Length: 251
Ligand SMILES: NC(=O)c1ccc[n+]([C@@H]2O[C@H](COP(=O)([O-])OP(=O)(O)OC[C@H]3O[C@@H](n4cnc5c(N)ncnc54)[C@H](OP(=O)(O)O)[C@@H]3O)[C@@H](O)[C@H]2O)c1
Image (tube, rainbow, N blue to C red; front, top):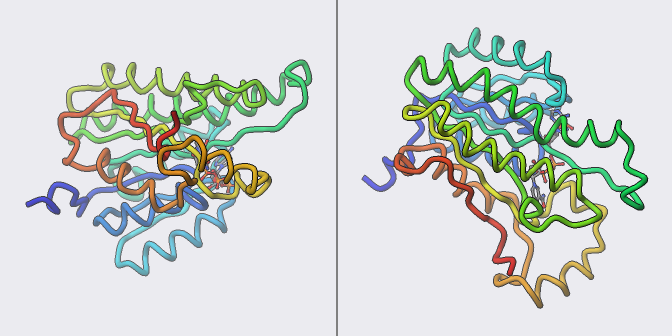
């Protein structure tokens, strides 16, 4: 009964940015729960590697190369997915990235557009295409991946933090737009060890999180999977428009 609530057998999940990091972990977690999985990111060969892992678990899978910051590519992404599987039951808007810069005045329009494009514009367009098709069918679950920076904006990541704050807002707005059969929720991620942390000063990070974060450490990618399965499945049937912190207890 309890496990049944999390069962995704027969459902199709699309994970943007599913080739690496948190998206990769969620793609495998969704497959483990029974879903077939579409993996979308810029590098098709990297998506195909995840697809091979999903297929090795006995699920069907499809790799699609797409740049999430390109509005016009979203139609093709959705059409390819529906042509192949006939449905999308779970959409995880996970692809995202930030850029480093010196002073805020050094942020160029191109940098702004890139960061806002992938973290906010792409998820908006993709959800606006998938949400109505879910609503016209059997309903579905859309999961956005935002950041704790959205509520604790830092000067060195301001375009990213602002885009993620926008994603929190989209979560609530889309939940009302496509409810009651489509639920839209958001995982607000804290620091997870992925490719994005490769450039961090991990010693300084460790000192900081030990001192301030309730769990005293950064997260491993598979520690996001539980929240994704909760939102993806019937376990969260009365939850929509919610933003859940998964951050190891940042004060
Ligand atoms: N890790 C953290 O500490 C942390 C904290 C808060 C929030 N987050 C959020 O969690 C999500 C996943 O982050 P992560 O740490 O797993 O990052 P990651 O390891 O760098 O993986 C990013 C994924 O997004 C894809 N991607 C990047 N740019 C893309 C684009 N323009 N179009 C399509 N796909 C693109 C990448 O594949 P390709 O290179 O093939 O495109 C990759 O699959 C992001 O939204 C991030 O903002 C992460």
